[in-house]
Length: 165
Image 1: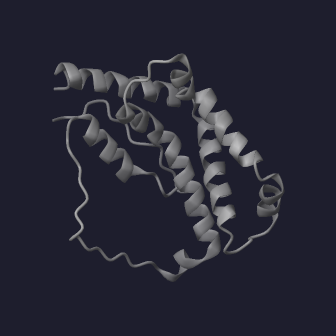
Image 2: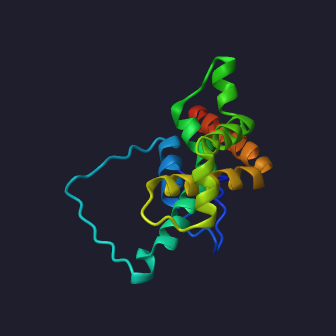
Image 3: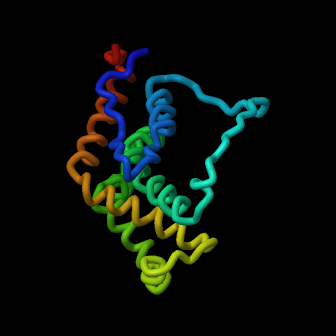
């Protein structure tokens, strides 16, 4: 099967962690492929020393958060159609942006401290970085967020009707 109109998520030097692997998996699922976990598969991933520093871990957490905004359209499509107004509202850019902002406000003092100090080893800081990355990405890409949702829905409809080429 060919996936037409698939546009990769935005990738920049500042955001190295694009979610491309997750995007590909979702796209494959939407086109009818089945994915599975193979417990016998083993992989080694060697990290250079500079990737073991706290500032790098914070940046990767922010990048992963940014990637979630781009993957939303796939995830929502895989979950299927939502029929109630409330369910549809929860899929909107506004809802997602507000929900992310609200989660950040849940720890205002820690957010403020994390912006000023490294706070090495604090798991909450990684969650804050993740949410911050997501919020910034949502705010920068409102139009593309909405158009991506529409594109993925159209691709899904095409696949269902056999028009996916």
